[in-house]
Image (cartoon, rainbow, N blue to C red; front, side, top):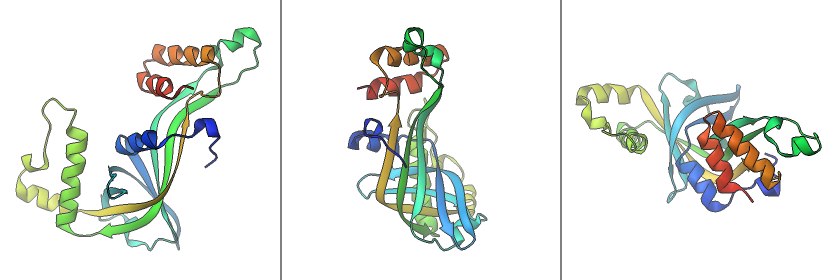
Length: 203
């Protein structure tokens, strides 16, 4: 991934992205070509791994991986209109762009076809995403037999991270006035998440 210096994230920013991303894309190269599955993943910073699960009927986990696996993790993103730039009124030399936060995570893929491992993963994933709910749901709220059946239908996957390429493209190459204009424009469209990301990473 092409990452100009002003769009590179520091270690803490990358950690936050890996910890608080939404659905990620697991990409593997196989003898039959590239395979990709969107799935939620949980980040274990101590072990430096991303873990998730796929449907047992998904062929991706069965196909031997050529080289490293890649996980594409995304943060906020938004279209940026040239009309939001203060510099449009000054000289008009502006064009549309897209602001975004993303990371390409590379590493070794391990498959876990073990109900105990998968059960632990599902509990960690649920606890992570339910934490903000007023009355968090837990796996053990459901009947044990039902959960046992659900776990049989999925297989765990884990990527041991070897390197991360992260890009935080949030108008750092624009003037302070242009950044303010984009933040105001995004907030006008209700995109507080991207606006806040811009403010955190402004130079």
